[in-house]
Every structure is written in structure tokens, then in C-alpha cells.
Length: 427
Ligand code: PMP
Image 1: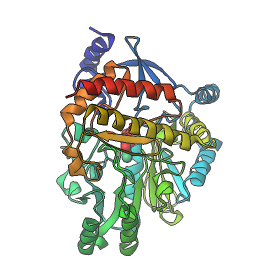
Image 2: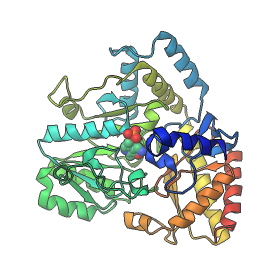
Image 3: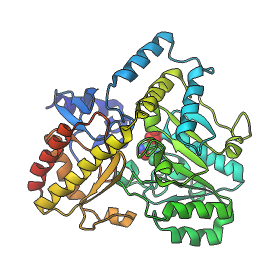
Image 4: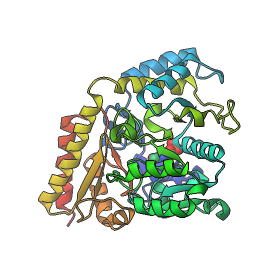
């Protein structure tokens, strides 16, 4: 038995499924999840001493790569000063100012501890602000395990076949209207009937929880128009895309201004941080300025703020995102070239530092039903083959891939050589 297999057996005795977040259990691909004990740059090292090129990056936060010296030094210094006081600190204002500068649609921002908290709070705020109850989301988008949003959800919910989780009261789920991503006509039709009852549209501006699906031209623009017309709050869930597809997130990349934004992942530099923010007029409804309640014992704690702010400062270095996008494109296009050569039908797509590949003969994937029609068995075989070659991809056909600043050209070359070997075995 490998060390990972032994550790997984022990973990299952005390932790449901042996993991603290379901996709980690490898149920989407089979086999035993790897247990890691250290990480450096673009590499993860498992308990059996094997090295892997990491395309998950702790599911997004590690945009600089692992164990970045700037973050380690800053964290060590903060630890000496105390890990948290539950009272205001100067670094919280520094962090908020940075977020407002990088994401101009945000006038005021509140820190929380996860992406789930960010979307949950944004939804509550939109409902409190508009006095309406209904929420529109899109099938295959995942916004964290928020009751109102765990309806036809993507990510692990999709991987494990439970897009509608038991435990959510039907009366609450009924308030969530689920439409088709990239289909603006269905949004317009729904709003013609129900628009004045809808508090918010929440959307991943690049969908990353049903593999990686960029918005088609006109989709985000159309959502903005519909929200303006019906007085509905437009929420961009940029937990995944924020600071990753560009410094200003997807809203910066596509030039669309939401009313509220949910942030997570990169904003915490690997520590548990989320945030939500937006238009002053709406944000002023949050407690203690307004009546919509929201709070957190550890929110804005200085250790988490230190990791996050150090990360945001580092990615502001000139050229960071251009390099990241170029490396990501090299991975994506390289995979496509290797697949073509092997005669394996594959579509690739992505934006900035996130990418997706689909075992499909369609040239472009824009809709959820196309994702579901991809060859999942072939994905599983490819994933397992790549793992053996020392390349760690997301263990699900429904997750986007992430790159980091530490990924080198040699790493990409190794990845593509591995892909070439594995594709030859796929037929
Ligand atoms: N929104 C999106 C778009 C996400 O991708 C995720 C997590 N993958 C979340 C929200 C939830 O974030 P967390 O896991 O930090 O609660």
C-alpha cells in the first residue's frame, strides 16, 4: 500500500469520506486521493515522495505558486504580532482599499471567510435591498454550498451527482429560478413574466464549475440590461475569476459593471478569505450601517489579510497577468495540438489564468448540455494517466484548471509530453 492509501483508510474512520471537501475524494475519477505534505512553486509533493506539477493551485488561491517567499515572510512577521484580535486593524483598511482600487465597481467591501459566505451574504443583501425574494442562477454554476444556490449546482455537487442537495427546504429552493448559461433569451422571457419579483441574478462571469465556459458575446451585457430594466441586483460571483482572468477580474476583462461582486480564493492567498462588495448605495444596507445583518468572528483577521494583501500586491507587478495568460494558453493550445495528433477529439477554452479541456468533437462548448455530453470515461482515463506521469489535474471533468506564476516553460513541456504519452493509450 502507498502512504496515501494508508492515510486515506485512517481518514475515513473519522472524517466523512475521508475528506473535508467532497471533490477531494476522487469519486469523479476513481482511485485513492493523494495526500500531500509539502508544496513549492508549481509543485506538490505527496506522502510517497513523488512530485506533481499542480494545475489546481489549492482550487485557485495559489496564483503565485506554493510557498511563495513573500507570503511566508509576511505571515511569519504577523504571527509574531498575534494571529487575531477580533477588533479593527490597519491592514483591513489597506486590504479594502486595494480591492476597491483593483475592482472599480466596488465602493465598499466586507471581508468574510470563504466564497460561500461571500455569495450567501451578497444574496441576503440583494434581497434586503430590493425587498424581493426570488433569485436567478444558471444551471451548472456553483456559488458555494448556500441553501438558495445549491440548486442545479456545478462543481462537486455535479461530480457527485447531487446538483440539488437534500436538506434544502422546497419552499426555499422554489425561490431560486435556474436558467441556461449563455442563453440571454431565456433570461429576457423569464423577466418579462417575473422580473419585478427577482432580487438578484447571480452568475459566474466565466463559468468554472462545469469545466470552463466563457460567456458568449452579449450574454453578460444582456444580464446588465435586464437588471437595469427590472431593478434587479446583478451579482458577479468572481470567487474563481477575481484577480485571475485579469487584475480586475472578469468584469475588468469584459468591461461589464455588476452591482455586487463576490470574491474568494486569490483574495486570501491560500488562507480562508472571501469578500463581497459593490455599489455604495447597496452596501450601505449592511449592518451596522443598515438593517441587513452579516458578521464573522474571524472576518478580516490579520493573518488572513496579510496573506491576501501580499498576494494582491504581488500580482500587481507589471506583466504578471500577461505572462500567466500566455502560459495558460500554451498549456491549453498544447493539449489541443497533442490531442489532434493522437486523433482524440478535444475542445479547449479558457480566459487569463483559467482553462478547460473537453473530450468532445464540438469545437466550442458554450452550454451545460454540451458539457454533460462530453466523454467522461475518457477524461477519467486521461486524469489517471497524467497522475502517473506526475501531472495533477482537477479530479473531475467539471472543474476548470488553474495555472500559477511559478509554472515554467519546462513544466509546460513536461505536461505536454505526458499528455502525448497518455493520449496514445486512450483509444
Ligand atoms: N463561487 C464560486 C464561483 C466558486 O468556484 C466557489 C468554490 N469553488 C465558491 C463560490 C465557494 O467558495 P468556498 O469554497 O470558498 O466557500
